[in-house]
Image (cartoon, rainbow, N blue to C red):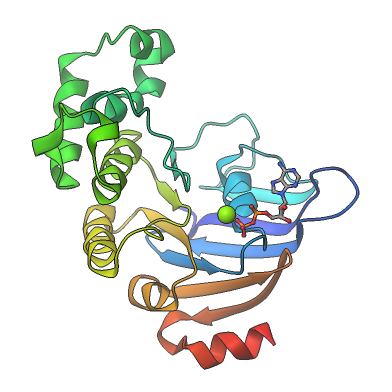
Length: 238
Ligand SMILES: Nc1ncnc2c1ncn2[C@@H]1O[C@H](COP(=O)(O)OP(=O)(O)O)[C@@H](O)[C@H]1O
Ligand SMILES: [Mg+2]
């Protein structure tokens, strides 16, 4: 079994073939590890996550996810975009069931034909995420923290080997953010890998083993998160 869940080798990305928004990125994430990606706005964090999910293709270099570099190969990657990507007019439960589409097909998802087994699973994940009591609530009636919980449950429904969470708890108050990160760590287990992008050094320090700092599309440092502090970040940003 391969040691790394994710390997990026000399990855470059240009949206227009002219200027590069990612330059020569090398990155390895072990199975079961949590990595924090820190960088100013526009530094390329979201682009990097999209490359790992294979939503976009690198202009150069290669990406290996769970031992495979096949572009078409399906990996169980749960991507939680910054805006969460929930369907506001559907219930929490219905949103989580969307996470099962790879097993039951888009048609099944579209017509809400869900096997009992999937319904049960969806409720279990909502429960793990601490939001099963609001399973029947439409998403637009939920708070920001509650929506984050639904988004986690939906990602878990994909039975992911990797979860990528973009600016995951950035819009939440610190208490709720910590609570949700704690829950995330708990449900992650020992084999799942997690990448979070964040502006919050404290969050990176508490919840990840390794922090990667990027700026202008360049990886400028990879630091053990327990030695990360504001001075260190200032130093590498300078
Ligand atoms: N679809 C796009 N087309 C062109 N440029 C883009 C696109 N998406 C992002 N960019 C540019 O790529 C750079 C990195 O963006 P992004 O990955 O969103 O950074 P971050 O998530 O760190 O804020 C920025 O300069 C941004 O303007
Ligand atoms: Mg971003």
